[in-house]
Length: 251
Image (cartoon, rainbow, N blue to C red; front, side, top):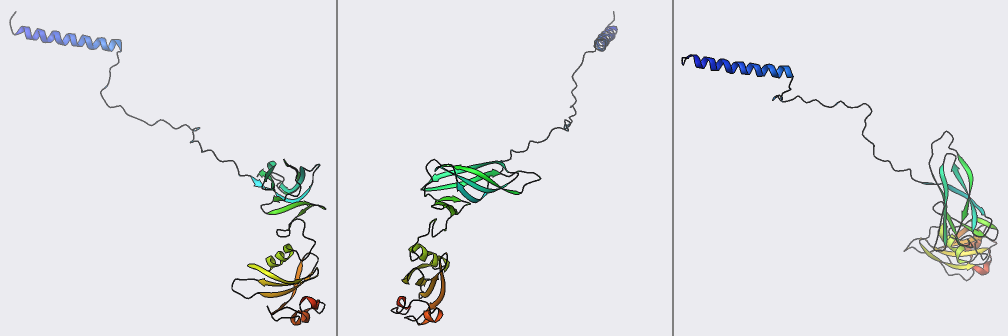
């Protein structure tokens, strides 16, 4: 065979083998990997998927307003009457005993409802030790106490049972509190019906002499005086007993 014929036959044989292999791949449906960069698409968002919301704190407790305290069945108990919203959730009493005092209240969580009017409601109050003369603090400041005549709201200065002596320090302190005196004054004369007291309203100022008469629940002023003796006081109230003022020095 001539040399020029051999290359032609070799080339023809190579092409024939390649064509046979290509036909076999098509016949067998063998997948092949593409070298092209694949396209990317975003995953569709589900209509039911949402970002979870952070946990919300439960509503804060509120305090019901205590309007009255009544005796309970024994010396360890009493009854709190409060104004409570009709839609209140989980109302409950809270009692704390410390430093010779009792802190009492009714807590609840606000509720939602068509009827949320204030309703008078009773809640039993139970203490670990006998209540006795211990003051009971409610409404963040009001003081109640058990007296010989029952439960009553107490005066911040006079306490639950005011002194029977009208010249007692507690009654004079009430006078100074009402006058907004910044410093303790000086009582010049006093009996159960009449009082002369020098008020020290402001630091650095001269005292103010004031005369009082006793009313049903405390002292009521009726005159002030600068000079000594009884002149200015008797001019305002002739019934004032002169022996309480005749020896007074000027204020």
